Amino acid sequence: MIYNQKDKSCPDLKDSVYLTPTSKDPYDPLQLVCHLANRSGKNREIPGKTFIWPERYNHKKFTKIRQGEFWCTYDFANYAKQSWFRKWKE
Image 1: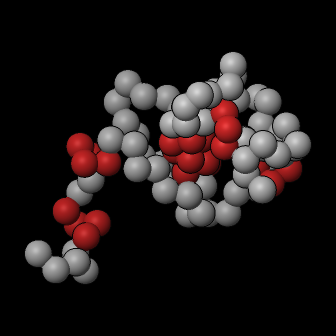
Image 2: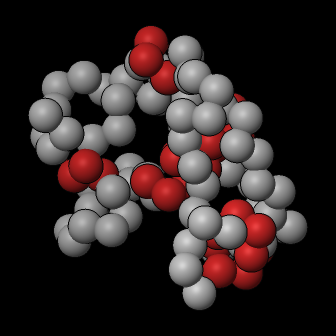
């Protein structure tokens, strides 16, 4: 259950800034995923951008992040490298 769930330590889809109407305390899922990506070793330095994890989301599953488990796609088109896609057909 990811919508209107009772566990306040996990992000609730109803609070996402991408849904209307949002709650009084919205979050941006992309920010959370990019923060987790940085913690999982998939660090993508994006000039002028810092991804903050809201303290209210302290669920135990967020403390154990496996290496490479998350991938940040924020502004991906502007910092992706062609070598990342060498197996793709042109």
